[in-house]
Image (tube, rainbow, N blue to C red; front, side):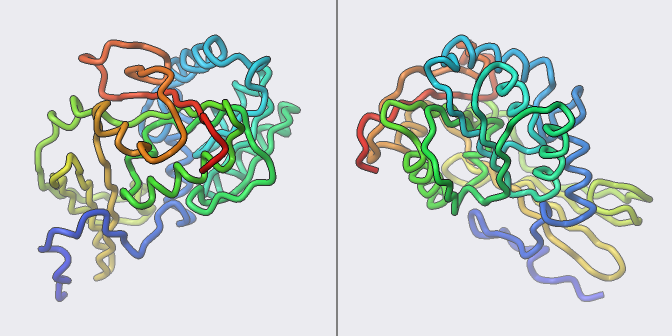
Length: 280
């Protein structure tokens, strides 16, 4: 087998791979399992933290004052369900067809009125504006710098004047713990990437401007498929630079979306923004 040159080269920053794993029938089912496991943080945070953060959101931004809520990257609807039960009118958006289908079925079983939409938030197009928009579990830093600007523009276009945005990112504290690594392992069956046996070559690469790449090459039946997961890490200064040209102000900084402020202890950084004018 002739191995591709890409196996030996460092990809350009935020280079995308042809394989969109969230659309793959098997891989998306594995991601859904991770989302729904209350004891892991592979795709969603642990349920105990989710419940704590929902309590914080309700206390800080009560549904009486911020009734219409948009949950970007809602996955299978864990946050959306709890926030609906707390009194918000929730719209959940996710790119994964499998997650949205699961969320719709789960809401129907519980007789919860949640408007779920399968959309890419880079091309978000909804008919309404919202009082509160959340994007939770560090999706913002998974996007390239140009895509982050698009997401901010989309959020502001869908936000009412005086509305709030709450989102989180991974912090520089976490970035400082990361080292470049390379390893491989053989998976016999029912691994994350395939139900059939495969060899996985993994590497973590560090780039300038606090960016990392977690890259997996999956070798199966003489076919090598790469998957790239990018992350940008932030402190308050670098994160504030992301919206300096937009009509928003910072209401508060937190170390996570549960409202803690132990910045030296947490791997995340969260911010609450307010839209100050309708010029977006």
